[in-house]
Length: 173
Image (cartoon, rainbow, N blue to C red; front, side, top):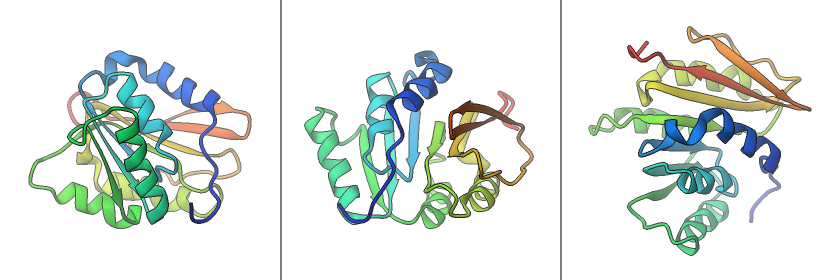
């Protein structure tokens, strides 16, 4: 696979899904930004997500994710991988005529590369992608403080890793 990447640790993935609980995922769509190996998306499918969409900019990784879905027995209509830069994919997903909404949007960008200043405002601009009662989860280094947006941030710390949860209220705000 092209370039080095830092997969989300098993401990952090377990913590993420324990916080989300399977009840909030059941039947809902899951968006995995900076998908890397696709591990978070596969776990979302295992825990009851209706559909998953991965966004990965590296072609070799995107192809490997698609192959992983097939090898795991998940049908193409439940799992897809888009090879694109996240900064282009998010607005494109937001423009879709389907009005698609995700109960969970999970982002695990490279640490300390400026994504803390880019990603939360980009998500705030496209907040309609988060289903009412859903959540945007931003995995980051504890050294990187994300930009403030209108949604309150709930941080969970796991050593050097922080999961920042931005919950969308049931009323859609």
